[in-house]
Length: 68
Image: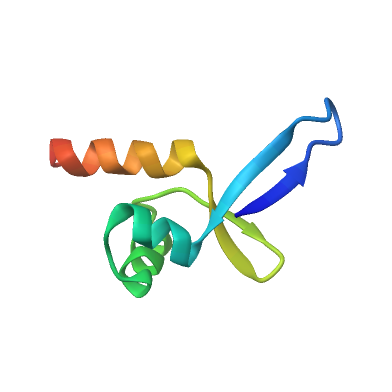
């Protein structure tokens, strides 16, 4: 988990890395990387890594369950 402090209001933003998010979703990290590359799940690129918020992962899981 990566925590980044907001410059504007001071709250912390929590981000999961690719491997943590893939465990939550239940798929191989390379499969999640591919879905991210094709735009099926949103992410943030921070430095050299791909990071996901809880909201992004939850939204993807809902769409996956709905079959969208």
